Image 1: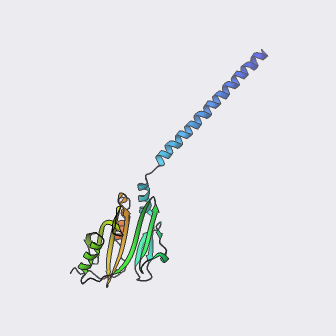
Image 2: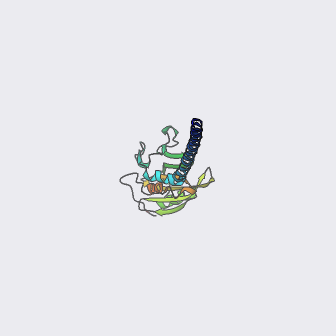
Image 3: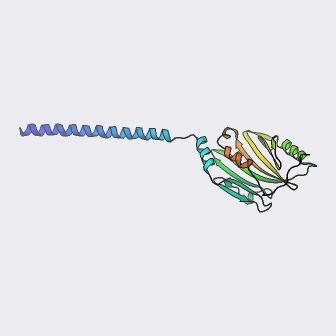
Length: 204
């Protein structure tokens, strides 16, 4: 009887070990499956993440020390060092991660005989279309050109504001495929007011 008892206990212990192994195996597989499902659910396309970051980011204000204008840009954009400026009054703010997006301010002279000729001259030089002309500004848009050659898949959107004999411009350079998630950047350009008071345009 004692031997039968030991044999029975041995079988019972072995069965318990098998059951424990099966239980652990099932738990591990379940955890792996849950982790996989969770990662699948948490995966979000880059466009969606980019849109959320742009829409929720705070804006920094750049104050130009040469011409005294202001420009806002998302706080996660990197400002180009002043030492890399090519001309006084220029500034560039960039996002470079998977894609390249640049926002740039420039200042140039209006040497044309009239405001309208100045607008047409800039549009021609940039291969751009005139999107709108307001009382104190105008907006150009078109394919981005660099060194006389079109940059395939990239476009620009620029707002020009007149200040005495100066053109102050705020431009957005962006990949065409990401126009939808960066709508807020277009709104920043549209709403740009470099000065509190600016000279109205005269369409001559």
